[in-house]
Length: 274
Image (cartoon, rainbow, N blue to C red):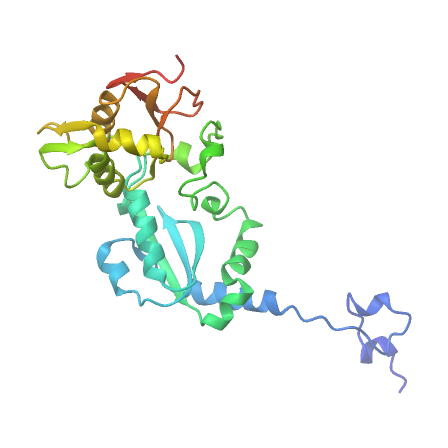
């Protein structure tokens, strides 16, 4: 019986490019295989609520993790040293946002050996899922805490994470105890108490102003909005606080902040469009 050559050596996408059908080039994609295994391992896990109890149960090891919002996979991240450290960071950030509730957030995590981190396991998963339009938070700015001064005046798109879920100016800041403080002391309290970035001028001249300016915390001062009003009331023009979609800033200069939610000047709120 005479066998056809292509029955013994079937053509492959790589093989048919060659003139000879009795040999072919085999290409093994290690990264694709790893991505497939990671995805399968994560799919075997049941997402748990993103709360204190569940985060504390996660071991302080490197790995990859997924965030879910309302049952939708929205973000894939990597922790080089400790998964719970990263989860706490996201938990704190989300706690200070409007339009979203931590009760709707769940997560799953996979420990990955340190040597494996060199192949960027989260990128393997991201590349695999972004093709299908999943994980929107990986491309809408969710992972950015402070984009830097050069972005303060930027007008972000409506689908940016900070525009979808802006900072909560009614967030109650802990440890705003009644009493007399320097502005420097108050700034430290507000900065450490807020779950979002509060950046302020740090030059020698500004530091001197902070240390010499006195403020009084009264019983009615509890929220970020209260604190921003108090801080701005203690400073003359051109000082102002700009509450931007993702963070707040304090600088002694008149600038147009196109994305600002509120502008605080001398204790009053100015419409950003004015």
